[in-house]
Image (cartoon, rainbow, N blue to C red; front, side, top):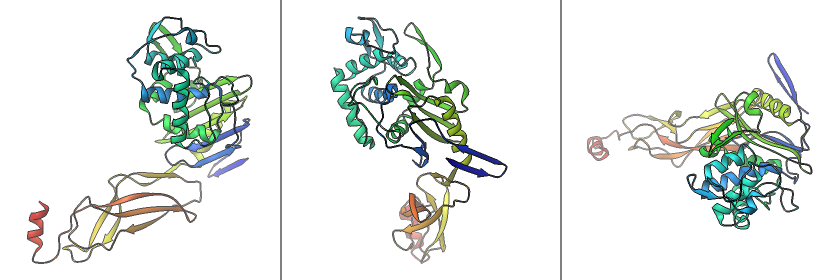
Length: 348
């Protein structure tokens, strides 16, 4: 059990899940885990991958004709009928809100030509994301010995999904009427968890209750995954309360802002501001401090042009590197010689 102690605030966090993880989305730092690398059945949380592949490879406005195989798929359904025609976007709402197994098959058949070819794309995508302990056998999450993942891998998938604006738009929708259907999201967290952005519920008798979610507060996004958890709604709320309170993001670098000043030789001025080429934030517990070291490519000498990359800022926590961003000259520095005017003309 993990304990967080802050001034005037104390909280313990634990879950009922067989496997769980809480991850900071931007940094990838794990804030809580339990058996996070155990291979587990994942049920309909599979559909996060299905949606990600379909949005990447398909066209939302495409018309999809529902096959007999799709219409008669077992399990949770958006109640498709054989021969019915809907847009791919409508099917994605049915996939992520209603958790339609029938929608998953229809999407797979349309995007890849067959379920088998679509599943191959799912596994290729998993490999490209670094989901080392995952295997997909179908697009809907029905139980199969070759269909499994881990809490850690599902958090990695969720991070990728939350960077896809279309997927976030659909997964965060509570209720929608589209294609002649009114659909309500199975994800109850959208209604009573502050800042919840989605993602996906799941259940089979063998897998138990599975849940992958994302929440945002004060610009920080966290991902929670629980597998085989009979108390998942409450567990996710507790995980987020813990994570946001105990690991607030520390924005160490902000794109375009000055990180440090560096000495310059032979210039009309003896120093230049170094600005961040990207933003960087890392969640810190109470008492933790990030250390920043500047690594210049070489000693700085005039002339220097504004915007020129000159090195990197490296961030470490307890001696371990956790990130780095490029350093750019924030201003032009002319040489302090009689040739300064000629150099100035070249810079212009």
